[in-house]
Amino acid sequence: MRTLICLLALCGLAFAEQPPEVKLKLGHYKNKEHNIGLVIDLTHHEARIRWDGSKSVIKLDPTHGADGRIDFIKSANHVVLQVWPDGKAAVFVEGSDDAIAVWRDGDATAL
Image (cartoon, rainbow, N blue to C red):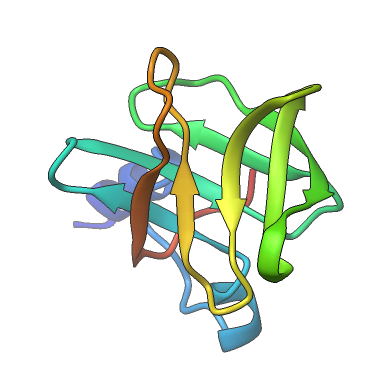
């Protein structure tokens, strides 16, 4: 049993309980309809995301969007992540012009 817990921790699957202020800035998000998921980490100045199945962490710069929304961009005019003051989030996937809403479904390890 101890070996299994250590293995889960090494794989990033075991998490300590996060305080509320961290839960607002860090977590795993998913859209079941599109079968996509990612870790969103807003604990730094730039946002950091990692898509499920990828080892690559993408750093995104914040810009002001409409109605208090923050857009996180990969490069000029290339929005990847949108976050609203109420905690809603949406992502833009390569090859899609429309934002895809994602919902927090669990804790995650900081990126």
